[in-house]
Image (cartoon, rainbow, N blue to C red; front, side):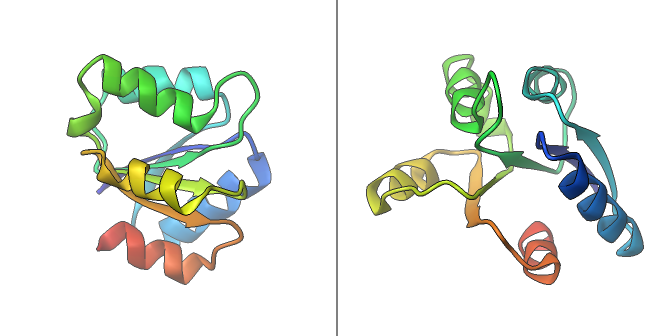
Length: 118
């Protein structure tokens, strides 16, 4: 399984990366949302963990770009966010092909792992 984790929080990406390694899953990490977008476009990942609130480019911006370029449907994205979304916003995101789930931070590592392998 190949995972990309895009999040500007280096402590969080390090923690999740180490946890996934213990579980036998390697992950590619980028703390720059623009580089994350490029990786998504250039490579195929089994799962993309995508933070929403990042400087310069929100996760939802990345989703809209992928959707406009007709490659969102080929993704398997789990949005991780501490932001508050309305029920309608969550429903609209989850209707999009390529969006697997939206998980509210903080999330337990075990719950995240369960979602990744689901």
